[in-house]
Image 1 (cartoon, rainbow over the protein chains, first blue to last red):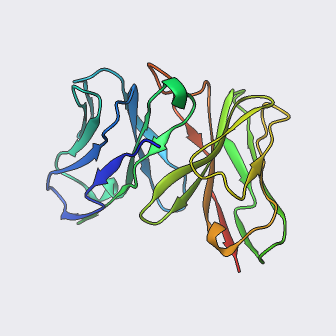
Image 2: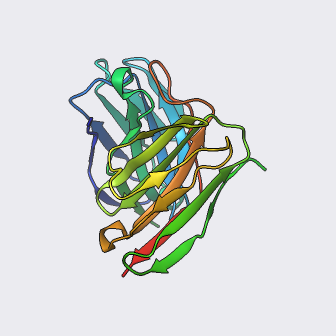
Length: 113
Length: 117
C-alpha cells in the first residue's frame, strides 16, 4: 500500500498569515490531487497536478508537484477564515494499483479572524 | 443537478445486524468507490468499481461487500457489522478510473455516519 504523509496534521493561524501544507511519499505518483472538505460534506477537488515540477495557482492557493513526483505542497497566501477546513492530498500510482486512489491523513486548518 | 446521493445519512445499529448503505450517481460515471473516514487516518478506500460487474478491493475491504449491477448504483453491504466499523462513509464517482497519467475528479456524496453499538 502506497502511503501519503501529510504535515502538519493541525494548523491554527491568524487571518492574513501564510501557510504551507506538505504531502510526502516514498512512492512515485502518476498524478496527485488536493481536496478541501468542510464539516458535514464530502471532499471537493481543488486541483490535479500531473507533471513533475508543475506549479498551479488558484487565487491565493499555490500547488506544487515535486520533480520526482513523490511529494506535493499547498501554499496559502494571506489566509482568510473562509479557508478553514480539512485539506487532503490524494494520489494514484498506476500500474498494478490502477484504480486505487490513496489519500493522506489530512490537515485541519483553522484561520482565526 | 449532477450529484452523488447516499442513504441513509445517519445510522445507529447493533452488532451483527446486516445493513446496506446505498449510493447512486446521475452522471453516467464508470468509476465508483467507497471510502471510510476516521480521525487522523484520512480517507481509506474500501472497494472500487471500474464499471458494471467489475469490482475490486481497496485498502480496507474486510467486513464489507459491494455490488455493481447497474452503472448508477454501488451499494455498500455490511453483513455483520462490528463496533470497529463505526465511521463516516463516503461514496464517490468519476468519469473514468484513476490511472497512469491522469486522475479524474472524484465527486463525493454527502457521507453516511454509521455507529455500531
